[in-house]
Length: 218
Image (tube, rainbow, N blue to C red; front, side):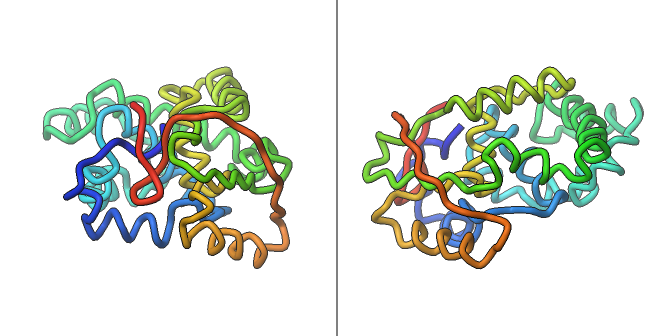
C-alpha cells in the first residue's frame, strides 16, 4: 500500500517529512532493516504512516529492536502480554509478526539473507518508475503480486500485493518518488553508489504515492 491519504497538517509533520527525505525509496540491503520495514508496511492495514512513524520507538520496544530471532521466540505468555497492554496492532497482526519472523529466518537460511531473496525478484536492479503525477503510481504491481504469492506460499501472513508494494517502495526496490521530487534523483544516486544495484525502467498505472510527492490508497 502506498503512502496513506493525509491532511495538510499531517503532511508537514516533521517525522513524516524526514521519513520521505531520508528513507523512503532508498535501497535497503540490511536484513534487520528489511524486517523492520516489512513490519511497518504490514501495520499500514490498521494505521497511517504518520501514526506509525510517531510510534516507531514503541514498535521498536515491542519487537525487540526488530530482531526476528528474538521475536520468533515469543511464546503465548509474551503475546498475551502485548495484547493486554493495548498495543497499537490487533491480536491477529501481532501473532502474524511472530509467525512471519519464523518464516523470515527460514528464508535467510535458504537464500543466505532476506535481502538476496527480495532483490532477486527485481533481478538485483532497482525499478525506477519516473512518474510525473501521483495518480499514476499503482497500489500494486505484477512484481508485488509475485512476491506476495511466494511469501504466502511460505507461510507468511498479511503480505498481500498492496502491502508488498508499499514494502517495495520504502525498501527502495522501486523508486516511486515523482520525477519532479528532489528525492527522485537522490535515490538514483544511492543506487549508483551501490555496485550491486542497477536501474531499470518500468511501466505502470496508478493510484497513489507519498507526501508532497504523493497520496494514498487503503
